[in-house]
Image 1 (spheres, rainbow, N blue to C red):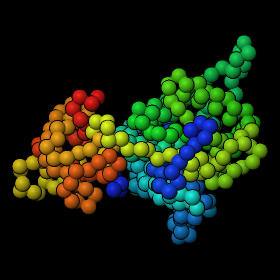
Image 2: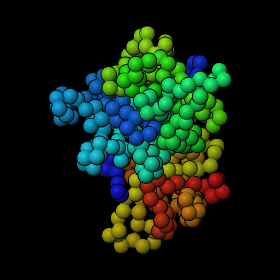
Image 3: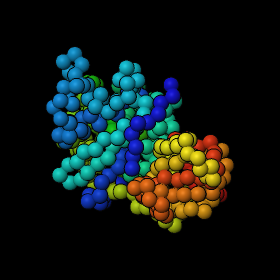
Image 4: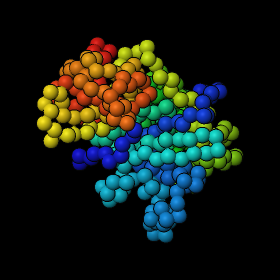
Length: 337
């Protein structure tokens, strides 16, 4: 399936966040790990969802929280997330922008697009899919492999320099010995993160379906005595934009105007958020993948005014010639990769 977007997007011990600034975070992980359900729970518990919206996501007399984010018709028909759905909510302490990233491997590009502008990532792990009840051999618990997409999404977030990564072990309400399951899964996650050099902000047990440890703490559960997921997110730092590093720009949307009679420059505008450095007309850029190069002919701000755009701000970039650039590709300073 060829899915396109209809939405435009204009620390272990102590976490120090700028709670006056909105936090952009994504939920990611393997398919059916509960990402859409978690976001639905956050929206409901923060009272962001209206009653008529809740009435529209009823299935068999029960509220299907995942339908609050699965907006494409194909997503509703198949019960999966294809595109990235963005939602907004706030608590008394902070505002949040959430990206619900797809879990299927063929939609990994969409997940990368969402992660490229995120301050944090919540990687969900479905406890019911893992062989956590492994036997002990020679005094050591046998380490079972995590799901491939759990590992892949975590590594991609790390490579994209997502500042804070939180592991959320989900569906523990469906396991009889939830405490033992959480202990062993947390150990496997810690071993994986250490081997990969990934710094993890926290690992928290949750039930997105029932709301345990999501917006409020569920005491005396799984042997966990830390903050709830939303309390963690309220304290996470936002990414500090770095002007000292080379230009990097993930393409999030391609605007086509092929009817234009102006052939002096490309007929497409590449929209996204400048991840680092800045962009201005006359600047040379390379496209990744492909490593083709071009010159920036025009730069538009989010209000479509021509100007130089710096890291952390949205921009539309027109190149001096047509190149094969699509959503999920990157425009970079030549030689920066």
